[in-house]
Length: 227
Length: 359
Image 1 (cartoon, chains in turn red, orange):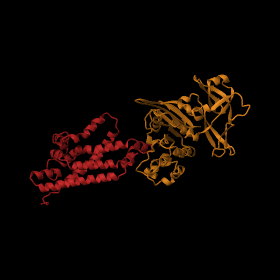
Image 2: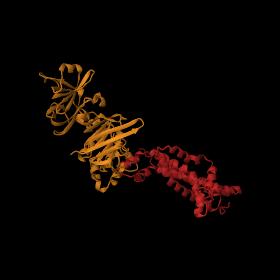
Image 3: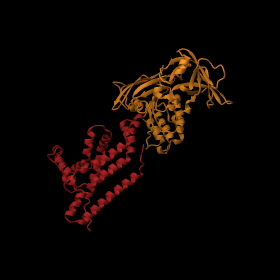
Image 4: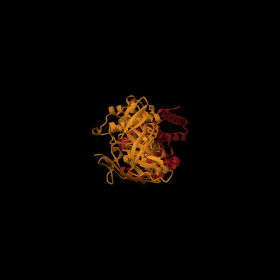
């Protein structure tokens, strides 16, 4: 077995992609989930359906539209190209953009149900004790949301690790830039290098299992706050 | 000069509307009483600034009107809810300090030691919330609200989730807060026994509107009150002073506006106040003092003030005994006695209830 022929590049790239994506998702997913959990707007169901779309769409469909959108003539890719000289398609940034959309429901949905179960009373109680909205969010809501954030982070991370279709469509297969583990596995199988494909697949499987295991055991230990 | 709390609120939800215009003394305990769905909690939420509606002014300070709206976190209010709403991720001490830390230092009139002492929380400070009993939780919630040094304390059925034993533990604390810390309290409840024990000013709500409001002795003496509070509670609430104890007969003598009342022996030292509730159906009337012996101990000399217009079997009579007193007699008796307003009459009181017995 020739492990040395195994390039660690795709592994690092994958971890990098997943980490950056999750951080962005937590930043934009928090206000989105908060809004969805508390709004009485009629827009709510529409937005909820949009957020859930990546769950049911074939990744190639999402990837196809993103490719057009991010490409040199796309609504996003075009202006970016005039600004920076290159479009977003087939770049790491493009991948992050695509992954963020693709994994959005995995972060927004757990956060939304977390905020819904907390309800509006802790915010009101904190306000009656003199806390501003931001203060109340950080001093009361966040500590009560540890489970929700843990679930959202891990699901978002793990889901980004495993994406294939979207990455292939938007990022292609450029070593060091867009070639992630799932693509590398596909490549190895294509050229019948089953050993390397095995190592990578088993590694991904084991890694995914371990983080899920960790989450579930931490979740079990975290106190459930019932008000 | 007395400070007032003025509030005009109009809230319209599908299937529910609140429409009130109140002027209450900004001192003592004001009890808001009414069945569920009458708008008690909504009124409290309006006062807190959790609903944006109408105008409100306390002790000359405008908290909201057409142009001004002080948001809830900037109002000097303390809120206590039925379900305590303590923060589960903080222990008792940190819950107590949550509002204190967020109160500007120059507005802090109450300090931790004082509140902990008044509410008897010394031994609970390091405890987690999940290890507290229902009564302890409410005491901590009360302390947490007090430590924001509120100008107004809003309590939404704070005892509703507690058993009778816990209630009797907490009621004295609420009275103590009002007396020792002189913070006006608006107290929402649908329990008549809590009303009687706490009330100074009463507001009765029904379907989002104020049915009756005013000082307790006035509200309870109103002959139309029967509709709002039910037959079993109709009758005057009197504040008396303990005169002396007669241990031989097991009697405590009370002073009421210069007249004397006897009740079963109380463990209250002479000079202290005792609130009693005299149901109107326990009062009968006679034009003469008894010339022979009678088993009735309590006879008050009164004047007829007002005769109710009850068309049924019985009729309510409002009497003036220095303070108002209510009697329910049959219409037949009314006719026999030929009662007229202003006439002197003797009220025979068959039973006196101490308000703390009602729990």
